[in-house]
Amino acid sequence: MNDTRKIALVTGGTGGIGTEICRHLARQGRQVIAAHLAAESEQAAAWQKKQCEAGFDIALVVVDVTSFESCEAMAKGVEERFGGIDILVNCAGITRDVTLRKMDTEQWSAVLSTNLDSVFNVTRQVIEGMTERGFGRIVNISSVNGQKGQFGQTNYAAAKAGMHGFTKSLALEGARKGVTVNTVSPGYIATEMVMAMSEEIRSQIIGTVPIGRLGKPEEIGRAVAFLCDDDSGYITGADFSVNGGLYMS
Image 1 (cartoon, rainbow, N blue to C red):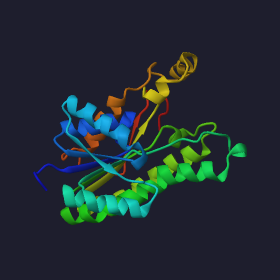
Image 2: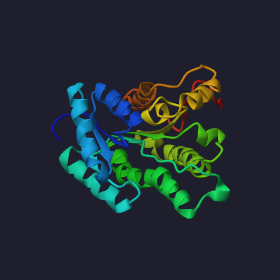
Image 3: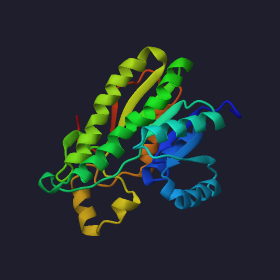
Image 4: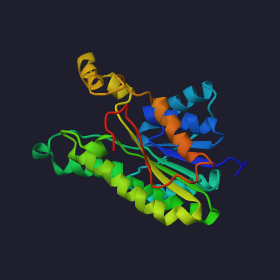
């Protein structure tokens, strides 16, 4: 390892929420690595250049989070290049929205594999090193819809709800080893995907949010960075809801 900065890996790091997570961790003094698909290498390179111009030195790594073998190879490569991964943010995710009576096996499997299997595939590669070093921060990006459900999202809601059980169980395993494990559950956030919706649909969504606006990606980044801070070692097994009051548990 070239310096004493802790190593932070963010899957889905080049996405709207992932970008702000990467930036907030970089501001925290971490060596940040954003993971992306091989098919997105050209876009990722352009993204990296944009981050560099904004003053953020963020490395890139290619991985298929649905493949245990790909995650294993990625983790080994990161360790050889930077050192052991101290902080992991599982942010990779997709949607395939359709009602269950119309959902096919591919739409179910793709979402469960990318959104939930990936959490095992990546976390499994780093948990042993974290426990051996006596420090680790794992944050899983869930969703308000994993808490309250959502019409047309049985696959997505199931995967995001599954994160909570994974998080609580792993939190117990890591508690005496200096490894904290938490979830952050965003509500409706003003990412490019959401902003691409028609103004009418966005207005309908905002109308259901007590605070009366969409969340900002940086508000998710701030919550993640707080949980990843060296001084946040007494917070584990928790879910941080960042949803403007849309759902309260």
